Image 1 (cartoon, rainbow, N blue to C red):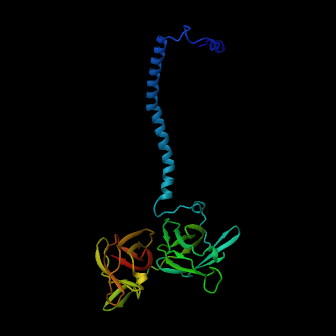
Image 2 (image 1 turned 180 degrees about the horizontal axis):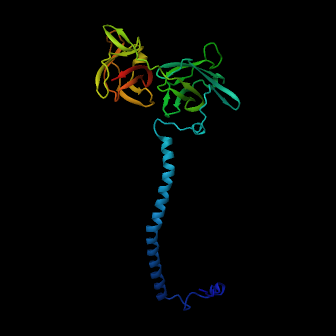
Length: 314
C-alpha cells in the first residue's frame, strides 16, 4: 500500500495543542491518558518481559553453576594445570629457569603405606625460616586431597647452610599420579608430580601378641580377625604399638576394594583405649563391608595414614 510520507520537519514546528492555552480540561485528559499507559506498561513488564528475563537467568545459571560447584566441591581440587593436562611425572619445580626444589621419594613408594621424602630446596634458609611448610597431594583420577602434617621451619638441614635436606613422611591411600603442592604459610611455593605404585594385594599374615593371633603389622597395628562376611557386621579388637604422640588422637578405618579407587568409611573413634595383650593401646570396633572380594583396610591416626591390612571378604 503506497502512502505519502508526511513532512516531519514541518509537522514538528506545529504546536501539539488545539488551543493556545494549557487549560484544566486538557490537563485532566493528559493525566488520565498517562495513567492508562502506565498500567499497560506495568502489565507488559510483569508478564512477557519478566518471563524472558527469568529464562535468561536460568540459562546463565545452567552454564555457570556447574563450573562453580566443580570448583568448590569439598575434597576436590580443580587446578589450571589439570585442565592443561600437565600431569607428566617431574621431580623438580622450575620457575623463571631456576630450580626451586627437587622431591626425592622413597624408591619403593606405593599406596597404603607411610613413606619418606627428602626435598632439596635451593633458596636461602631465610626465605623459609619461621614459616609453616605444608605438602598437599592431589590425586589425578579422583581429585582426592591429602594434607601431610605441617612443619614449622626453625633450623637448617643438619650439616648444611640452607634447607637442602628437608625430610618428611606420610602415606597416600591410592595408586596413580599425584601432584605434590608445597606451601609456605598458606602460599603456594611450587609443585611436582609423582607416580605412586599399586600396593601389594596379598592377604596380610597373622602374628602373635600375648595369647592371641592378630592380622596386621607386627609392633604397629593389628586386630583379632573373626572373619568377614559381606553385609554382616562383626566385632573386632584392635591393638596398637607406638609412641604417645602417634597414638593420641582420633582413629579411623577406611576400606578400598581391589580394582577400585573408592574409599568407604568403616569405623571411627575419638581416642584409643588402654593396654591389652602386650599392645600399647587398644579399642573394640564393629565393622562391616558391603561386598565379597579382596579389600584393604586403611588405618588412620589423627587423620594420617598409619598402616593398611589386606583381607578377604566372603
